[in-house]
Image (tube, rainbow, N blue to C red; front, top):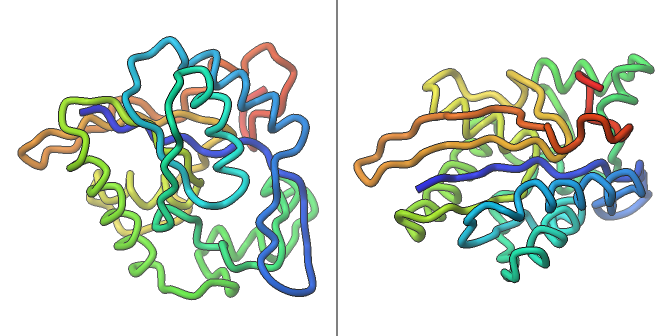
Amino acid sequence: MELILIRHALPVRREVLEGAADPELSDDGLAQANHLADYLGVEPIHAIYSSPMRRAVQTAAPLAARLGLPVTVVDDVAEYDRLSSAYVPVEELKATNDPRWQEMLDDSWADRDETRTEFADRIEAALEKVIAEHRSQNVAVVCHGGVINCFLARVLRTPDSAGFFYPNYTSIHRIVAGAGGQRQIISVNETPHLRGTGLPIGLYGK
């Protein structure tokens, strides 16, 4: 089967005094999600899954509408910052040299409720369950940069990491999963649907 991991589109900045920030998509993010749907909507995708976080659910919605599929929410592919009271796009953190940028680089983010290994174990278990339920099918999972990092690190058998590379907004990452347990990465950071649109892509690329 082919597992298609998709990072969410650009959300708004949100900082709250109580509870989780859990921001919705920005206007640019909604446009990115529509371009994603146009790009992937011609592929034979059999199921769509999403993190429960708003930015992921809203990113999945146009693709689901295009393909006429429901979106199945999977709590265990939520990002490590799901309980954080603040969401600031990483580009802004980097540009302002915010201390949280360095925390992301060295994986010392304080506002989390699980260790790096616990997070990676959760992600791997959730995605392997999706794989097991969709033999010989193509499945899209809209999730987060940290989720994609951790699963690809497990496939590559490198140390668990939430930040060994940077997935762009609505970037596509394809993994072929064999019934015998083989996992092969066939593409990383596909973003041709954003090229030439004038929309932000992320830290790298225009």
